Length: 135
Image 1 (tube, rainbow, N blue to C red):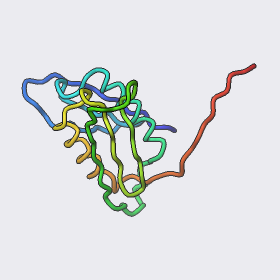
Image 2 (image 1 turned 90 degrees about the horizontal axis):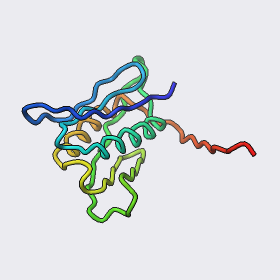
Image 3 (image 1 turned 30 degrees about the vertical axis):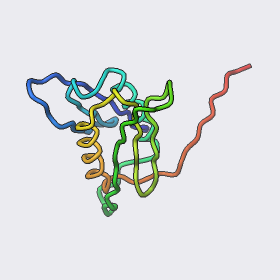
Image 4 (image 1 turned 30 degrees about the horizontal axis):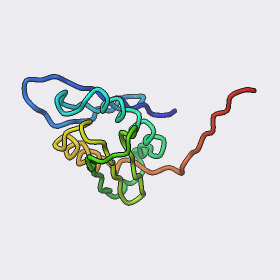
């Protein structure tokens, strides 16, 4: 079963640090509405779902892995038409994000939270799929 990742924007009276809730089919990332745009929420949902294809939760009997650093760089000069680029390595993950999609405070908070959760996930071999239209 492939995981599906959702991103929700919540409007509250006061700012809150973004957080992640797990559920049977994946997880939901919750952000303060002023910290992420609709376009950013959509782009991150897509990127996080694609990334979930490379990672899976460790079984309860498996030992925890090591914590990997994860961070986000806001890029004011991102290539036109590009929202997020992910450098997903075994030793680190870096998100390069077009300026204006997410505020730095939420970018820092969510990547810190992801990094704290990383020992409970394990990297999977890459999978590649080619789609072909019937002729």
